[in-house]
Image (cartoon, rainbow, N blue to C red; front, side, top):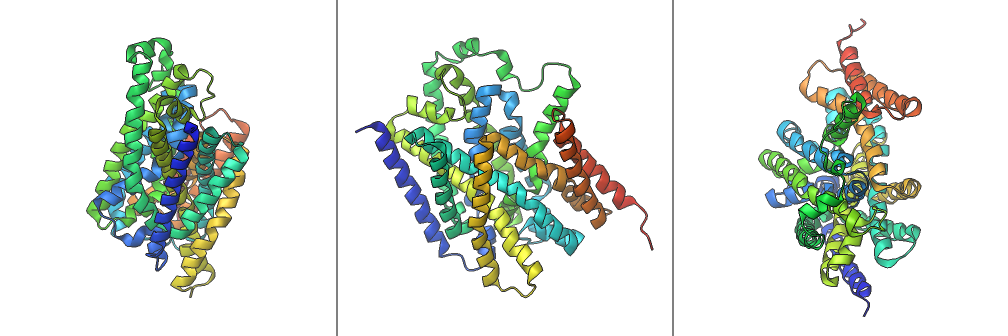
Length: 459
């Protein structure tokens, strides 16, 4: 039998298993709190597993390896390095403050801190952020199916979309959490098997370094250009600071059983993320000499097909798909949670728990379809994810950080900071597309939030 058939059978079996987990988890869903934060009952193992696996998805596995193939380590500073930094900062400085207030969504914090008007506006701002990230997961899923089956990209992404939407609709956060812990170990095992096999086949690290330009291993810019360093700082901040305000991270912090687990699991996950995230990055760089004909976008799958046995490929690819499903599930859960838990009550203040849960679930296919269109338009996992992260950095991060740590921050300041940051970011992209527009947008947002908050109030 063709090895690819065996691989597809194994992967199909893995997907069926994950869907089964989603169906079983659906039996635990009684209200929107169960759907959004798994009832806030996760212990150490499940909490670490779900934070790590949620972020270790399309960008890290497919996007980072593909970008590293083309640009080296400097091309992937945002993820995994900035992303790992974000998890550590969240654990050190934000988890305790949010967990003690028992919020369910990040919008709950904004409503509590700034009032209902800010909550309404920020609820809308969050939607385009996650549409792009969902699209990145669907695209990565489609690339894997395309590499394994030879199907054209369009039907591959359509299949991926169908699987992810069913999985998310059924189980919410409980399905995500139950699958994440298992997938984390499968992915780690597969990557740790593939990496030494590849290094040995290429003649060891010395031989590899001799064939790849030194620039691919640079961790910081080696020129004195201010522009290079500004872009470098921006890469760290895109996720490192911007995603501190991400609903998917927020929900996992709030899903922990207590403050200690909430803080510790974020910090441990961040350290794991940076360490393990280096593996797909190096696989992408080494793939330049292992598979010369590769374009890079699916280099991780191409390496697996070349070096692993059908059984190991099935396990690794199945786990990668599972991780991408987990990230996609989280990406869809974030805006659907805001729609059901925050937007619906704004429209109907007496909304029942059943209505809010229904709204969460019914928004899943709507969000999925829009994200599918974005995925097919951009056709780049890493770019699509980065464009999404940019909105958080320039619009939401400053009002959130100042709202937590500066008592003088006002609702007017938060709204002005968001509007000015987004406007500056758009302006830089239109008129100065080569500038570090996200970095500039963030500091404009920070300054505008502070200045308006300090401005004298009219009587």
